[in-house]
Length: 255
Image (spheres, rainbow, N blue to C red):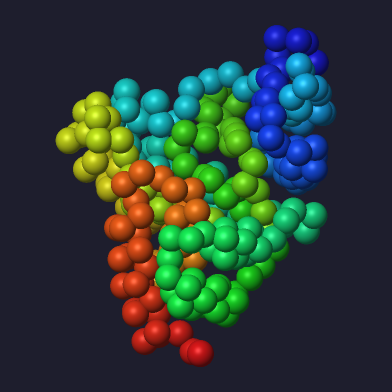
């Protein structure tokens, strides 16, 4: 591979070799599954920092295209949903457990009251699991569109688990996550993100039939895990949202 066709993702100095090797193993496993992802080239060290060498993907981010051509919203939502459904058609047993990732983040976060964290973790244990490939951070800025179609990047959060957990994470990122208060054109973008999410979810559920409630229950552990990221503007809103969703789940799920 030519030098200018490669990119190097450098990790922070505090990242251990074990962490880098774990992400490298996930990247390689996903590539070997046949999904359209950047090819993994190896691990290199630069000035004492470890990095992963990947194939450089040319094209444009789906998020940038949506802002430039908002009238193509339905088309881009379909691309996002169809690509996500393709990801969820694969199983890669070698990937780490997505449920374990969520559980660890919930257990180590100090944001939720202990009783709430315990209830969320108990709910997580009761939810059905699988070995489906889960991206872990799937949203419009992790999709590059080029002449060969969509390519999914940034697989650092990849795992195996229930695909609805992965869709719930996308739901959170597109519909619920905080946006900067000074984000340009916010009055235009906020309604657009609602329409885009609805179009994406509708298309996904047509491709992989299920109900929105099958995904909504996964929002509880996914939002709880998100709190460990300490994103400004999300804490109080998400804690209240978890309480409301837990109340609803108590009425529906067997204990």
